[in-house]
Image (cartoon, rainbow, N blue to C red; front, side, top):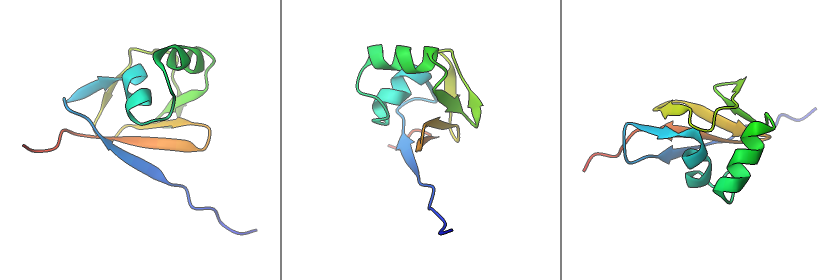
Length: 80
């Protein structure tokens, strides 16, 4: 069976932390805040491999958020 590459997109944030619902939109994993609420409530989102149902969960640099096969990693603020 051929191996599939698992790609994680790195997404920089402006501050030290970001809420899960906001990050889903920023990382283009979902289209709207309403969609974020639904996919999180339905248990379709994981953070660092564990299902997360709190939309306000604080994410920090290095956290990996996944919905299905799509994943994004929180990257800390870029130096100015």
